[in-house]
Length: 623
Image 1 (cartoon, rainbow, N blue to C red):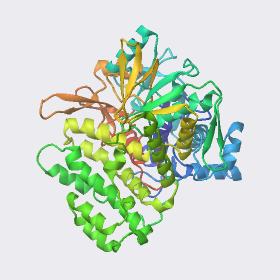
Image 2 (tube, rainbow, N blue to C red):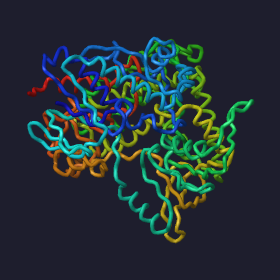
Image 3 (cartoon, helix red, strand yellow):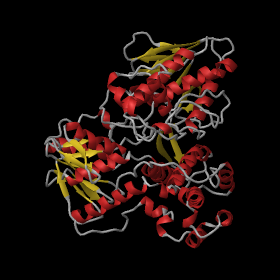
Image 4 (tube, rainbow, N blue to C red):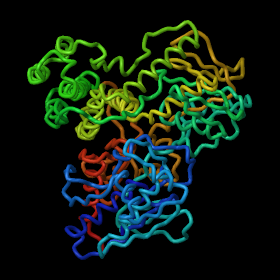
């Protein structure tokens, strides 16, 4: 018997792979799979139907699939199926039977490849996928669903798993954790801010999944400091404005106008960059697709590891990644827009491949005349760095122009080179687990540069909101319900003023408020895990928190993630020993997969991980 703790898209994805590999590896045995999750199997927590209809995906339906295709390099068989847009079309045409709530019929009927569906519609797709997998499982595999939480796991043969609402435990031969993002108790600084709020009758909302947080106590007209400008902020913005009865109206001259309900607070948003995540790109590649990865591939990682000493991410890895991004960017520019370059692509490609990092700028300046056509990763990463303004109003005007320019560029296929860089970033993410697995990354560099800066840059550039969300942001600014705190935002708890006080590096002055919201997910932390089962395993030493050795101090620094063996997903205990019958997959494991849906025809890493772990489970022996 197998217990899968977490029955969202990842858990059901492994179930699909168990069925696909059964003919080869099950060999006439019987496997009972217990799916354990308090939320519906298939959608899970994040994609459950029971959430606000205002909340949307940040992916287009042509870019979302739960099925393998012939690009996926796995040992098990390929079992293709429809992407989200193909599924919607087949349901509309009546060629595919799926249960779709009446509230989704209008959206389903109007859905196009470049729309951004509601999370509720994605929930219907995932629920259909789950039902399809159950119906097609081969003889010998049985699934039992438990709509509850797992609260305790004891080792033994078999292992014993206790559920929250079941007197008798499950006895299982193997356990797979597919728990997604990890909820965490407040860290030390958050606890201090929470205590400050209690002492002075203020309101503090620590990091959490926005759709699960109750913000109803924030009163109309309240000044609210918001720390975070990513996807969690976008959800918060919608729930506190349109979610409170306001209305966006399309303007004849373009853009949106917001009509307030009077129930909205006033949001003051800040972050390190001081700008929102980039809007999702709305066009396709127009040139010849680049073969990726080219400069940050398995051979490059081997060469890095052959050099003496620890690997520093910024010094040793980032130059290879930035060259990968530039290669894909300029490949698209040269092949899709040859009128905007001054060099034959074959000549440029040869020179580019041979160029050292310090030589690339001169090559690009010679080949690409317009500065706007050149890829400036430093400027892209920190667009407001060093910019100073006299007032918040001046900064707001600059930020508005920045967002308008981003919306224009990401809607104009003349800038399709940006999509080239995006595809390269996806290929880089697929290589990172192999790099981490080597154990050669410098500890501080791994935590601050890879887990901190680079993964944040990936989300900022490649995992932003639908363009309409930024149009709504501008409309809310125009309505006086949103303002901006600038780059390098700092928030302090001012005992004398008995208030939260925010300031930034972009303009002088401070903003005072009685409410502070952390608009972000918690950082991964096994030490602060709020899940009962993970805490029990951690405290018993059965679950290790990934750590890295600091070569200078000799100390082990905690990385926060569930410690797994990247090669096969096996969980490691507190002493670093792999458990033969426990596995974990997800963004907060050592494998560091992106917490996003897989795109069709990209040899997606989650499919490869799912297949590998499913095969490992089927190779186990059990009575």
